Image 1 (tube, rainbow, N blue to C red):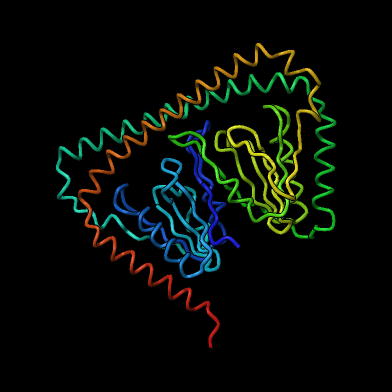
Image 2 (image 1 turned 90 degrees about the vertical axis):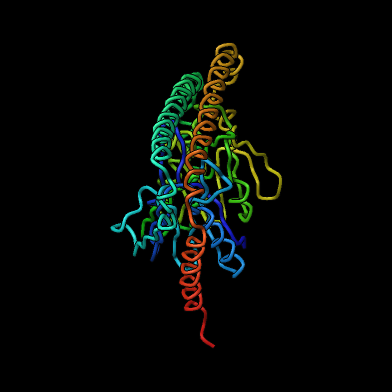
Length: 368
């Protein structure tokens, strides 16, 4: 089994900043929330703890930052049912919904006397700029989504909805027959990818590598891919089948992938910007375009669709460059806090947390 799983639980989307932490961290017995401004070492602490826990053979779920995918917003220690998150990233987690929440004030390591009044004003200005740049990025993504809706219309108008519904019913029967339980389940909601300053980024391959069966859904915008996934998700929940529900990182109202851990099966939208092709046993293609769209639709509307594609692509590039701008502003703010942080205090907090986690791991070991 893979030692780590990789996800996003927040995204920069056409619907604004979107958080799935409430669902992703549901059912944990304890969550450590690291508080403090950017640059005080929270992500570094989380990464170091993840590495040391992996070395101890623990399974770690890693939640990446959509602004810098190589940095972590949080982790879950699967066997311990313990989460550790950056408090600035994990909107949606509160004491009422989970077990104990423990705040760890990493910001204590910050020596505010090292931030001059002039620096404070600069930071304030930069924060304003950051908010405004994010807003512009979200507005631009929303414009791109509206253009995408225009693109979908051409295919929706040529779609055989009865056939699409039949495909869903057949799949529900094939996947779930004999697997039902009397107790409905609630899906766990996550992102497998995100819009980042470098463009779309995803973890589909690592999330599906251990599964026996992968169904690659192909098709054009509007050919019913997300609707199919919504029908499958609703049926799985009502039939009591464990399910992970992955939302689209561009439009979180759409679904892009379902994983059924016990069935060892994934079904996902395998079109750009997360286009993959079968490359092993157990992989199969479900082509919604050839199955549900009137033949010749692409050809009949090719000129109009080409123009829409260009407009869509231009807006997505613009939104991505705004995210890159946001990342640069965030780095400027970080630099002030890095310079004023006493990292030996951060190391001390990390050691305390490490020791608490080690005790929890030891308490799980069978006594000799």
